[in-house]
Image (cartoon, rainbow, N blue to C red; front, side, top):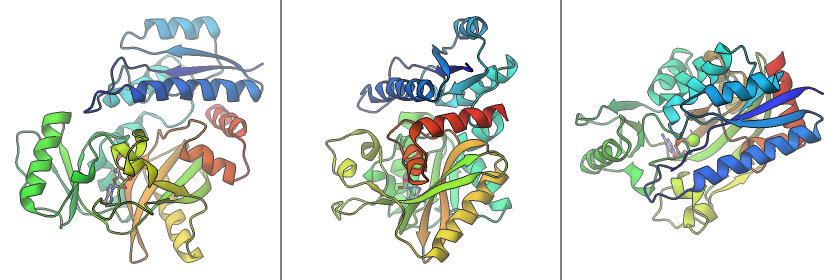
Length: 328
Ligand SMILES: Nc1ncnc2c1ncn2[C@@H]1O[C@H](COP(=O)(O)OP(=O)(O)O)[C@@H](O)[C@H]1O
Ligand SMILES: [Mg+2]
C-alpha cells in the first residue's frame, strides 16, 4: 500500500478580530476529510503536525517513510507568511508533496507581486497601489476601491467597510489594515460585477474542473457584494447566508471561455501545479483576476471538491488524483 503522510499545522489562536477559534477547527476537519478519503482510495495514511520546530514532523516522516506528503499547511503555527516554508521543508527533506511549490506559494502570498506577474502576461487584474505601514495613501487607483491586507487570504480583514467610496474612507481603512494586520495594504479598484471561480487540477496542462459563480443574491442592498470574512466563517451573518456558489455558472459560452483561458494563463505564468483556484470579477464581459489561490481549501465541502464532483470525481478520487500528480 502506498503511504501518504497528511501534513497540517495547527494554530493555537486564530487571528480573527473577534478572536474566534474557527480556523483551527476547520484545519482539523480538513485533515479528517483527507485522511478518510485517501484511506477509501486505498492508501495507508497517517497525519503529522508541523510546528515552528520541525523536528517532530521530520521524525514522524522518517518513521513512516511516505511516498508523498499531502500538504494541508496554510502556514506554520498560524503564520500565513510561512506557508511556503512548510513546502520548502518537504523539499529539503526530499519528501514529495501535493499541491504547489514554493515559488507559486511565495508569489501568490503577496497580492501585488501576483498582479504584476499577471500583467506581464496581459491578464487583466484591477488597477492597484500598495501602502506600507507608516505611509499614507497618495491618491487612489479609481473609486470605489477595496482595501485588503496585502499578504493575507481567507478573507482576513475583508468586511463591508473594505469597500470605500472616498479618499477619507480609503485612508481610514488603510490605517485599519496597518493596525490590525501589521502589513501593507493593497488598494484595488473595486470591480462592480459578478464573481466567478475557476477550479483546476493538474500539472503542466491542468484540467478545469468547473467555472462556478459566487452569487450574492438576497444580500441586503446596503452591503457590498464581496466574499467577506463573515461570508466564510460566520454562519449567523447576512453574508454567510447570501454568499452561495452556483455551479455551473449560468453564463454564455463565450464568457466561460474567456474565464477559462485567463485562468489557464494565470496558472502558467505563476508556475502552478497540483491544484488551485483563480477568482474573477467580471465587468462588461471582461474578466479581471482578483485572487489566485495556489493552496485553496481542499476540504470535502469546499469549492474545489464541489467543482470536482461536478466534473464527475468523488472526493476520494480528487484526493487520489492530487497524490498522483505529486508523484508525477
Ligand atoms: N477588486 C475587487 N473588486 C471587487 N471585489 C473584490 C475585489 N477584490 C476582492 N474582492 C472581493 O473580496 C473578496 C476577498 O478578496 P480576495 O482578494 O479574494 O481575498 P482573500 O485572499 O482573503 O480571499 C473576493 O472574493 C471578492 O468578493
Ligand atoms: Mg479570495
